[in-house]
Image (cartoon, rainbow, N blue to C red):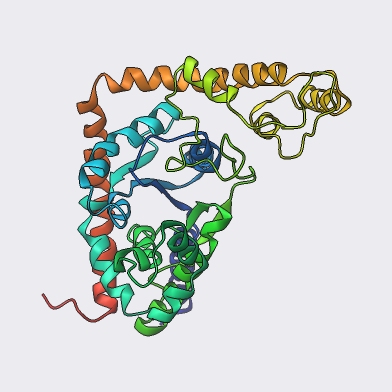
Length: 357
């Protein structure tokens, strides 16, 4: 081979390698919601705000309506799951998720996810699943012991398949979900080690900087099941009523009494949602010194939440007038997600030596 031809071959090889490395560094983001009810402010600060940002930053973005996950603890109530598919889609679209930037799809319509879950189940042990802190905590919350549904116990495995079917490598999560991603990366490592090459990339996490939103009662995180949430679709009257019920400081009986800011749900919400940080800081000083009543700070919060939720609620109501259009968005997104899933599974079957025909 002549020197000129050799140099050309080397250059071509370097170009191929560089392009391959660029492909591997592409950010593919996947997020999702379980369709068990309308979404609330906790979802907004915990995940939706990140989705809105990442759909503009990522090379590829997916949003999954996790109906299969929802059935792990709602198997006896599939109607609840089915009815809420369009509800969570409406909430996300109303907040600004753009289906031209984010592929929105329904989990159960991607059978490759179930196939990948079966293969991944061979890479984990029962003992490891039982040790997962996220699963253990959720089992305690739901009162499960040895009678835990197998699908619920295997949630980290199925979630790994949810992420990897589309070769997603970046996942926004709350801190409570980090053990699930840790286990997912164990599966990635074992799959690549067993079957060669780098079929899957290690999953990176993005943790929201916003503190977890407490419920109206201040006793737990905002939750649909605990009935302590302000929903993104709540009316002005509902927002006012719910803020009126918020836990403040039980010792702050009279306006002139000094009040406590720590543990005060109204101030916790103002810290997160009020953009006038200097104004909130001044209110805290007045409240702690005495002379500022709960009614004043609650009225301020009502105004802040109205400014945030009203445009979302109005867009939601507009979109809800044409549910067929919303379902068409999900159908088209599901078709695109299915194409990605089929490409991934061709690679998976080849690596596992089960590509017979």
